[in-house]
Image 1 (cartoon, rainbow, N blue to C red):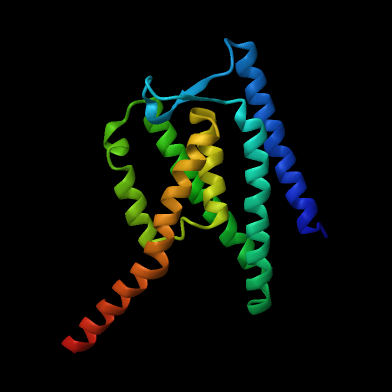
Image 2: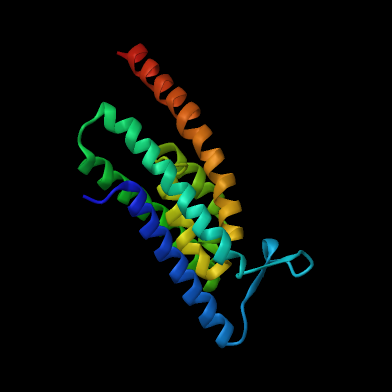
Length: 185
């Protein structure tokens, strides 16, 4: 059986190789792209070169968080298969959200872009967007459009807000709705 540390090494190595391939492709096809903060030319630009360093480190860190949660939940629930399925689902939701945002930006799809914050806030009520695998999926999907740094900063802010909503506001709303239902019955 594959050890979690070996799996982290493999996934991180794959991320590094993909980022290196992407940077190499950019380098030989017009130069490595830089992205201006908030897409404003007056603001500083961040080079995609940073992704070579930051994305593998960030991946390792997030995979370590997933491993820690697995070890904590594994002691409570013996089914690792269920945990893996949930982890993949969370990754895919983050990836899908990142991909939708990247494609909306590239194709200037304003209805989605204008409502990104609302979408994140609503999603935070029903889904733990602050989980490491969701964050990783989002960043991986956005890296090829925005580089690594801008998506990391964006999702860390949104995940922090999402954690507050999911852990504290959501339970309060659910409890309030239950009390209202009980009061009407």
